[in-house]
Length: 52
Ligand SMILES: [Zn+2]
Image 1 (cartoon, rainbow, N blue to C red):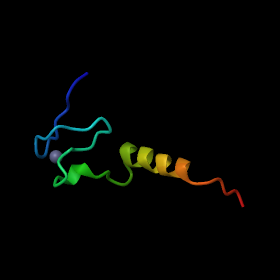
Image 2: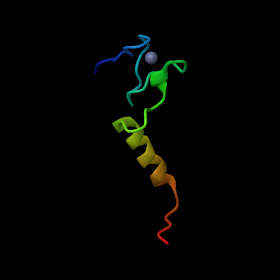
Image 3: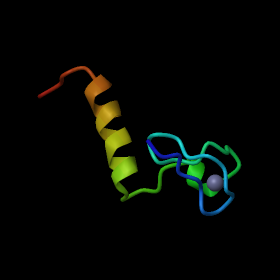
């Protein structure tokens, strides 16, 4: 297991690929990236089924 570091601020990266520095732009997922899509899928799964 390797500890990745943010190339912007040098802070440690979380397992989901986001920077753990809340003040860094990379601490939030960028729309269109695999990370953002994965988070969106998680939210989708939490919704109650509504197939109407
Ligand atoms: Zn960072």
